[in-house]
Amino acid sequence: MGFIAISSLVFLGGMYLMIAFAWWILQIIANWRIFIKAGEDGWKSIIPIYGDYISYKIAWQPAYFWLTLVLGIVSSCLQGTLETNDSLMISMIIVLIKIILAIISIMYSVKLARAFGRGTGFAIGLIFLQPIFMLILGFGDDRYYGADK
Image 1 (cartoon, rainbow, N blue to C red):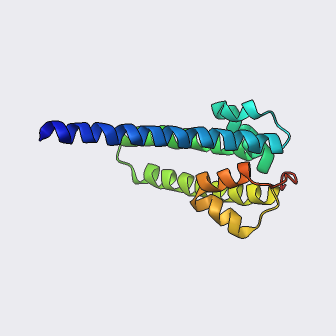
Image 2: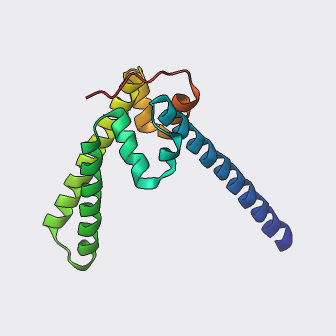
Image 3: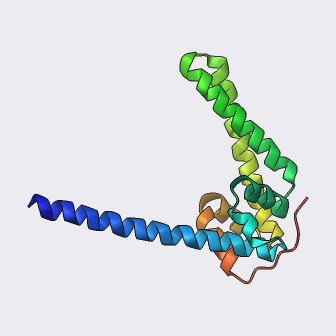
């Protein structure tokens, strides 16, 4: 009985990995196509930090990418010090930084939707179901209208 249970779990785990890998490949292709629609080279989408920089350039302004990068690094460093020091002030600063990052992320989604001629409903979809709506942008007939400054 144990062999059947273990083999079933291995089979289900393998199926999950195959589906996850296919989903990951679809996301890469969609991002590649979004970059091409925006007039950028598709390969830029697969470079980790550079791809995010270009995404902010496509949708909004690169300055906000640098702001999110710096705030993310500061938040991570503060969380590292929080483990050794229980300070309410550091906790409040971390929460404030995370709120700022969430607001910037929401604004980025709205700007990305506008850059491709989509409205508020699509922006809400990008906020809550970003992988699915990125697939829609990548594989749909949307045109790039330019960054919304």
